[in-house]
Amino acid sequence: MPRICWVEDTAVAHLEPITLTRAAFELVVGSSTLAHKAERFLTTGWPSNTPIDRGAVVRSYLAPWQRVRFPDWSINDPSWLGADRTLVIHARWHAPEARLEFSSPGHGDSPWIGLCEGQPACAWVSAEDAARLDPHGIESWFETMAAKLPSHEVGGVWTSYLWDLVARNADEIVRDFIHRPEPVPAPGVFPHAAVVGRADWLKIDPSVRLDPYTVLDTTNGPISIEAGVWVQPFTRIEGPCHIGRDTQLFRANLRGGVTLGPNCRIGGEVEHSVVFGHSNKYHEGFLGHAYVGEWVNLGAITSNSDLRNDYGEVFVPLGGDPVATSQRKVGCFLGDHTRTGLGSMLNTGTTVGVMCNVLPAGPLLPKHVPSFTAILYGKVAPGFPLDQMFVTARTVKGRRGQEFSLVEEQLFLDLYEQTRLERERAFHRSQQRREDPWPTVQGMR
Image (spheres, helix red, strand yellow):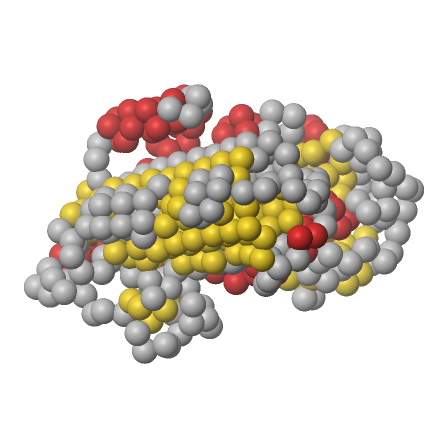
């Protein structure tokens, strides 16, 4: 049975806050994950329906939670790594669409390493070399492999920051569309929906409920809608767009380049954004060029800016330090289990960590909100006690028939300690700026 092992390097820290609670290969772009795209590319030469034995080498604190999420995988398991030859794939590699031109692994071929932009992206290695994989030395392992194995250019691009995925999302929805399993609906199957553009650019599961006065606009790209979705009246969906299973749209205006779900509740205006599963934006408000984690709740009228008022380059705080994006359109990045209050206004390029409580203050809110903190009166402040946050998480997940498990609780306890220094730095900076309660206004739609 062919074996695939996903590995993470230290640069996954640049993909926070989303990668605080999941492996980088789980990041979504288009209508599928980075893992799905790489496997689709690398296994094109394998017989159809080939069973695959999967494993991963991830950050140590994340391993117990990954075992819960992927019970059939071998996570950070040395005995599994050394059992046989393995196809090792870099978690941040965004694979291309074109078929691999050299021989596929798993058919008696010799070890090799695949390069993306001159850097190792994947490798077909012996059991002995696979056994040397270590969560604290992925970069050096790839360097060793590159020095001794023949290399091939495999193409693709690197995912360095979350805004890279947002910028590519619309094109990736188009690329993924041909692989979607949903059928193209026959004429008259959804009589209440008005279709503008190409009808063959629709893939809609037959179980989808499309109410009257809904518009599907494929003028600029395809639309795919998975099973169980409910689209309520006065919703407009503009392609490219992908809507995950069991998502509900309430008078929403989706303006293209949008990926939602599964099991989200979305209303208001959304543009060029990725929203992970079980998150809510039920009410009016604008979400643009954003990347939002799981179990996030955006209160009514919560809006973010994705364009500076001087049309300049957007800088995003990572760990509190500004990083240039080389882009003019950058929204916000929100970690899992974060909540915003009624009327919150998020500045251009805002980063909010996990389990944060953001309350409105009139002006635009701080751009850097560390995990487990709150925004009170426009300033970063200590958040609720962890026990109270966990009670809320249990309530939120319980409403969707899921459990906030002890393993997940331990994950957030570990994260609380890991992010302590970032919080302390943010509190210190907030105290220094206390004499100036009105932050410089950058935001603009």
